[in-house]
Length: 385
Figure 1 (cartoon, rainbow, N blue to C red):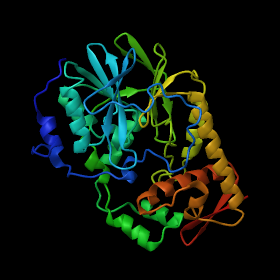
Figure 2 (figure 1 turned 120 degrees about the vertical axis):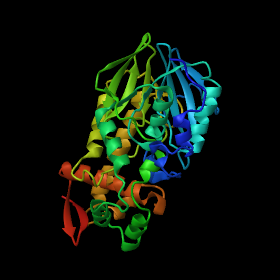
Figure 3 (figure 1 turned 180 degrees about the horizontal axis):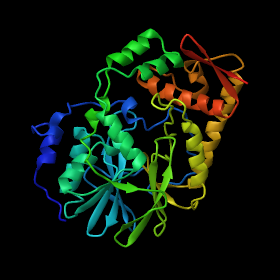
Figure 4 (figure 1 turned 30 degrees about the horizontal axis):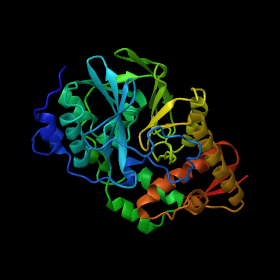
């Protein structure tokens, strides 16, 4: 189906100029707690090679990186600065992987692409690696604009629908209880409460009612090219990577990032989970892929050195786990573990992310039998066995 350049209902809804249900979201800005992509744990990028160096596509332009893949980049606020969108050749046009936030800089970048590098290209489908808002924020707009399907895994789809539909005014009691359990003081808890709840829906356009499910091992046939779905978890519930064996390309999303470690957090919605255990198991699974793949991450530049990167991520997390056990010869709260995990000072903006990561590490150690947890007045005190 040919791409339409004219402004339509999806475009007016995006700009807030329509009375349609899609216009109900107020304008928003994004912060680190919303994107939740980059972890705060320092990570080494040594041993990787970047075929395109520090080059990156300008607004409205793309870079061809493989026989079936082009690279576009969308601006993001905050430290991340950008998200990569991977454009895959499809039968009769192009499939878009990951979409950016529902913010004017991202939608403007898409308009520049539709007037520039994609001017003569039909959009055939939207693929989202996972449910974080910088990946799904404009998926609904693009689906509606082009009348194409949205592909996600079920775990990511359902979690996204749950999160954007939760419109209560104040944080759930479980969120406040976990903040207190982690060692937040009353001022920090009140500051978080004052921010309200449901901010995620402000940066995510209404998702379509239905979707096309991706599952582990599935082959997505895009024209003459097949992409195998490889599922990881820990950073998100059921993150989809796409393996193009013909071109030797891995669309990695946030499961593998070259210069930063993906955020892995324990959630108050699933407090008995072991997300770091899932993430480390995903590393072991991804180590079974060929070492010489061109890895296309959501943030940073395309690189080679998959196994080198995976080993570094594995080793760095285990080093910090060992350091935590050594320091837990006396009881500590999650907030007391920040200096053991992070080389930066944790301020108000990153307190939520840091708490989630610290709790994920402590929970991993608890499941592993290396630490135990005592509860005193609603606060979790962790100590080594």
